[in-house]
Each structure stands twice: as structure tokens, then as C-alpha cells.
Image (cartoon, rainbow, N blue to C red; front, side):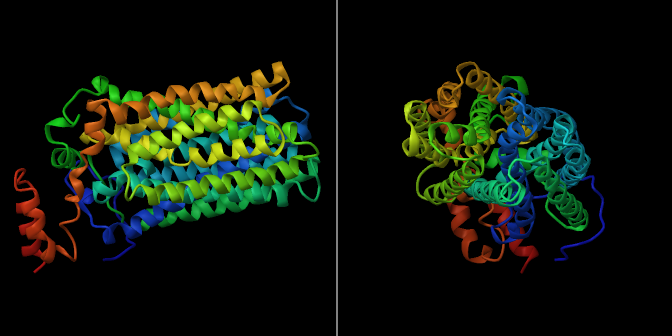
Length: 475
């Protein structure tokens, strides 16, 4: 099949069967989308590093520097619930990816004049546009990764992709430490090197937008998702329920708000924390410790994805988030290397939470799955919670004490982890993902597996005819 061609961006609401692709058939489109995960991980990693150095270079308080996070994550709900959601519903995934990359590129180019003028307001404005682009990408990429291919592997796919994103968050602080600030310290001259990095980023993302324009990637329409919900959840899905009655979706959105805001607050003030609790630690060394912690975060994503092959994702999510609460709470009172270790372990166990909330939250919602923007919109917590932490830190002159803020929000996010494990209406929807039937009876192995697959779902009887048609068409 040709990988590149000029074709329309509008897909309508036909059944494309993209949600029933085999693992082999999803390799190319999911590879392209995984690149997007790396891009926003990289951007996020740079943001955490710049936060501390703007405090030193521009002489601003911790509270004011949180304006970067507010600009970045404040753009997310505008995208996920606004223009990105509109484009996704009317034109599909590929058009949304192209829009997001274009906005990201524009914001990256605007970093050039902001760096030349050493303008914090300019950086915030450019960061807002970058956040708009990344929010647009995330609005489409997370549900696309979850629903393209066999539903059985939805959580695994999205966790692997998010693991690649975590690699980007490691590279960001490393680059900030060694390129931006290592040789010139916290001088204004160091900020000007930012322009070259973002110029390269802008050129790359615009090139990637061109690749997406000409690439043939499967679309997943509302009709596809309605059909998949019938196959995997039957009467237990939320496919036919009004949007405003889907309380499980909104609960997932709140969990995402509380969790993401806390994660962003911790990473954004990680360098402040370590320079305060660990004697003789410079900002540059703190950035290196942040890179190590983000490396643990990435390792947690990969290991968590591996564990999910044998343990249900909802269980892994509950255990990991519980550990996040424990270690983050411990970091409040611990000093020196012990405090650093506690906060580093917090990042390790944060790893699987975001993607698993997305994957669990959208299961069974069928043709309303594009309303998963509610969950992505929860990322706005990254604009709300960091300023709260910063205000507490400024008031008490202690970033360590301020870690009580994310602990409280993590506890509220834990209510969703508890619900999907112990409340039947939540747990049943999370567990009913088709047991691997959908998508696995299609493709090159269909002749050897169709009979068995059809027997396994004989009670439903809905895939047997499809498999027979596929065999006939591909004989």
C-alpha cells in the first residue's frame, strides 16, 4: 500500500474499520504519531529547566515564573475543548495533527524575538502558542493511540508512546543544562541560545506537518467507535448515553486535572527543591538531577508498560499512584540526598498515571470518544496547581513544605484509581475491552485464527460474518 499521496482531509462518518486493524497494520501510522509524543516531551522538559533559570536570569519570583506553566497548560483546554476538538470532529485526526504541528512551529519561531529581547512576557506568549499546538496534538494523539488497533492493547500502546514522550522530557533538561546554561551560567547571553534550539524545532515540526499531509494513515470515525463499543462493551458501554450523563468520563477528567497539575508542579520546581534541601547544589547541577529523575520517569513508563502485559492496567495504576502519594509526602520532611531520592521516586511512579487515565477513561464511550477532550482538557491543572505550590513556597520560603500541595491533589486523583478497581460500574467498563477479539481476527493470520476467533465470540455473532467476508475478499 502506498504510504504517501495527496488526498482530502475530510473523512466524514463512514465506517473505515481502522479500529479493527492488526498490530502489523498499525505500525506505520502509530510510528508517526509516536514522534509527536517525543516532541511534546522535549518541549515540556525544556520548560521545567527554563523555569528556574528565568528566576535567576530575569530576577523574578517563583510565583511569577509559574507563568510559563500557566501559559503552556492554560492553552490546553482551549484546544481540547475548543478549536482542536472542532477540527477533530469535522475533519479527523490527520487534519488535527497538521494543525497542532503548525501551531507548535509558529510558537517555536516566536521564541527567537523573545530570546533576543530577554522578555519574560514574550516567552510566555510564545509558550502559550506552543501549548496550543501541543494541546491540539494531544487531543488527537492520545485517543488515536488508544483506539487504533486491537482494543486489548489500548493501555499498552498508549503507555509505550508515553514512554517515548518521557525520553523527550529527559533530553530537555540535559540540553538546558549543557547547552543553555553550563558555559555562560545564568546570564542573559545564555537565554539567546534558546532561539537556535527553537528555530531547529520549528523547522522540524513544519517538515513533519508536510509528512502528515501526504501520508496515508487510517482514520477512526464516530461510526467506527460506535461499532467497536458494541463489540467490546455491548449494553454495558456508554455509546448511546447522553454526553452529560457520562459521570465516569468527568471523574477521569478531574483525576487528570489533579494528577497532571501535581506532576507539572513537582517537575517545574524540582530544581528549586533540590537546591534548597541539598547543600552546595547549583541550578546547573539541579538540572542534571532533574534529568536523572526524568530518566527514572521514562524507565517507569517502559517498566509499567511491560507489567501491564501480565497485570491489569487498572491495578498497576492504583499501585503506582499510591506510591506517588507516599514518596511525595516523604519529600516534605526529608533533607539532603534522602529528600532528593524521595522526589525522584515520586517521578518514577508518576510514569503510568497520565496515559492510563486517558485509556481507562475513554473505554466504552463509543461514538462520543472524541469527547475525550474532557480528559485532555484536565491537563489545565498544569496551569492551576503550580502557581498554588509557588505561592506556598514563597510564603513559607520553602519549596519542600509546598510539596504538600501536590500531595493533596494526588489524593483526590486517587479516588478515580480506587473507583476503577473497586466500584463495579467503573471496573466492569475498564475490563471489558473485547478480550483481544477485535482486530486480531483480521490481517495476514486470518485464515489460521478466524475459526477460533469466531467460536470464541459465538454468543455475540457480530465478527463471524466480517471474518468470512475478509477471507473471501483476500483469498
